[in-house]
Image (cartoon, helix red, strand yellow):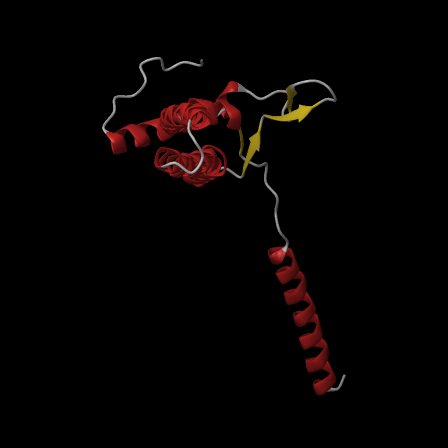
Length: 204
């Protein structure tokens, strides 16, 4: 055989063999995944920062509602007094200006009790959700987990309250990380605030 042809044939065989080896090496291997499950609603409800946020929000809302009701009562009294005064008199004009100021304050507090409070609360909830999500991701990476699954979801039926339906019908207790995540979040929160952790420790 011609030496040149022999060299080309050898090169082709070598190249084919190298390609086969590379293909086998490059082929992705799927190993059994390391999986954990988590109950987001349980974490959310038992996160101390969420409880503190709700308490602070309700206290602020109650204060604003008290001020709103005080202004409303003052406005009612002014309206009653205006009925007894002669239109155009100095007293009537002074009370009419007071009525305008009270109506403006009432409108301000009404707006504050609706949109402003709602926006503020939603922003805080979004912040808490992001913190929980970040902590689950950090925990998963730290423990070399491949997948973290939510255990259930809420669905509403027509005319009925929302029901919790399982996404995972069974999981061994060893792969449940809900309690660990709650413990980590609450520990970090109490360290940051200097407030002692809730002594209950268990589910509510």
